[in-house]
Amino acid sequence: MSYHLPSHLSDLPIYKKAIDIIVLSRSISTYLNQDLAYLNTDGTEDNNIYFSGDIVQQSTNLAPQIISAQQESCSHKKSKHLESLERLTTRLYINCKRLEKSNSNGKDYLPILRGELKKFRKLQRTWMLTL
Image (cartoon, rainbow, N blue to C red):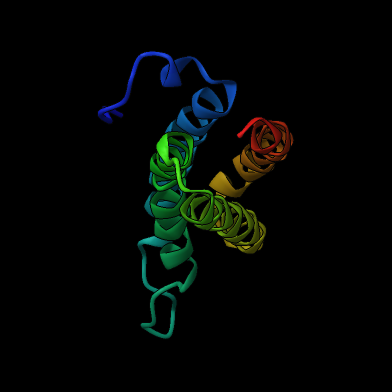
């Protein structure tokens, strides 16, 4: 990921964890897509394939929200970024749970992503207190 950010922001633990989550979610999604891309016996597609795209999109939006919140000087706008970050994290966690019910070998990797999200949430709480 290459976002335009000051060097001190890339040293933030929460930012580093967000980058880890992006890489992990992309890898898992790629693995899941290989299994979920096939049509069901009745000719329909597996709806879980959309959740695999959602985890990539949501994880990709974590880092920009962190950067925006960190750089925002107005407390009202900063809280908007923090709320958005919380929503993204919650949706990402929910989509991981949904994908664990999918018919794919890749679902075995989703608990790893959920574990990383739990660590991210802990970092998030601490980081929010510093803003």
